[in-house]
Length: 170
View 1 (spheres, one colour):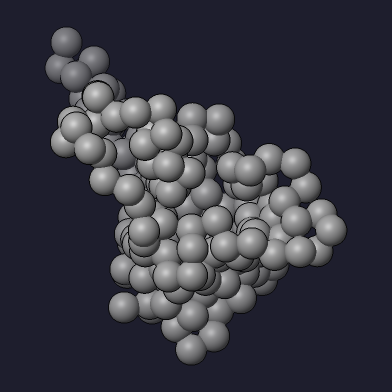
View 2 (cartoon, helix red, strand yellow):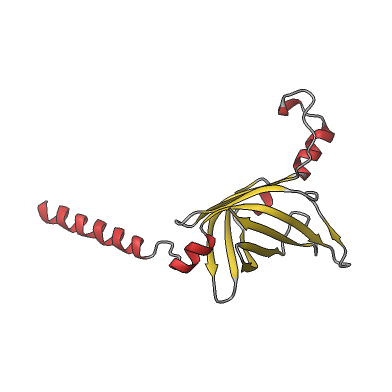
């Protein structure tokens, strides 16, 4: 029995050390560049005909958080959204609900960064737009002077619309 316990204890400690070895890791450089809180600057959709729209308005509000353990959370809101007249979201009119849905995009999960290819990979666990849940989304990025720009090729608008999202590190 003691031998069985010792083998189990060894196996558990071996597994734990292996899991820690394979855990999320960012270089110090990437930690300094990415980890922290970011404020939304702009979201610009680019349509197939090259025309551009601002789906969250001229002054969208939002926050992006990159944690050092590989977790992330994104919240994007249209600055001007109507309030719900009934003061109860369960009693919102169809028009109020439509405005709320169109003025919101949020998701969270885990992320990784390929500094060589300049790609952020979001592993979306949960999202306001449920079609994204379980998706692995890769976004090419640039990062200069604490301003992060990335391109979303599979937007919530579907089709051939792409979006450029800009964040400023706080």
